[in-house]
Image (cartoon, rainbow, N blue to C red; front, side):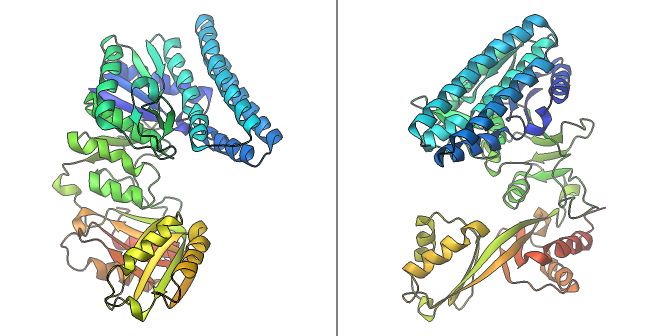
Length: 465
């Protein structure tokens, strides 16, 4: 098989873990053609973002201490990881070159005392740039042929929207397939840094948090891989968060659309955009654990078997959000009212997570992230209150509970079971939303009630069996 395998940060968080990953990859390479994608070592991306914030605040000493800690961390990993003296020397030279570039960038940022979106992307891309050296040289130390490549070096081309870059698909497909086929044909394992690419001017860009998943599926599409494996510290997509529901189980098989809904409703195991490159070529994806390779995890596919088309497959929850109720008689029958409200919030940089409108058109309910709540309310009051809006009501701490499953479509009584399960816990449902696809049903409750509701729903639909 031609496989693209992505390893998350926890998979490569120590010399022992990196060595274990390298042994696993080497064993797979004997019968398969492999391309490896790596995230940054666990915690490093957060530290790099923290450095950017410290530079912006003018706190040079704290930023300097944190950058030295990152540099020392990678030097220690490299020192403890490699046994062969020559290989260790080559890794040390490569790491020193990359760390020198990092120090030079930080020095320039300190001198300027500012962080642009462009310099921020370049800074946080170093997490993956450093981790690929560790994994690639660990493979070489075991006797495999391997090469570390950044997203830019592999041929990933994006627009210049730093922080949330969009892929230039056709250009990327040509460059990536040409670059990687050269290594694959020589039985050399490319180890590619996830999360980042470069624009057409060669400036480093990033896809946003969780973007290493996206990198893996982009590459899979470009080289026409047979499967993509996303390896992390979880066994697969779960029927619920196991921290909330002790009986939660791994879901064996889901469709692309089901997995997309799960990702959007808080399943942290996968980036929502990661499915886009797979859909056209119908490439299967597996979500698996690095630490439990005997478990095949969750298969994400375009062709579900009949026995896997359950009514409800999982119960997800997104906690700590804000609810805004916008009211006004002048909203009734007035074309463009909703568009005005949404565009006003968009200009203020507020992302709307969920919407519901009453049939009378006199009320629109909006869910936003809790840290966007004050900005959203202030924006609406300053721009629209007393005009098209007569009143703005706020509920500060709410949770979105969502049920996902393709078998919900056309099944009578699903909503009744859902709200009966909530009622048994004496929980009030504040807001409801369901798409016309009937693939998911989401509703809003007080955050303090959400865990009881999730457990009740998990039990109601026998998801633990």
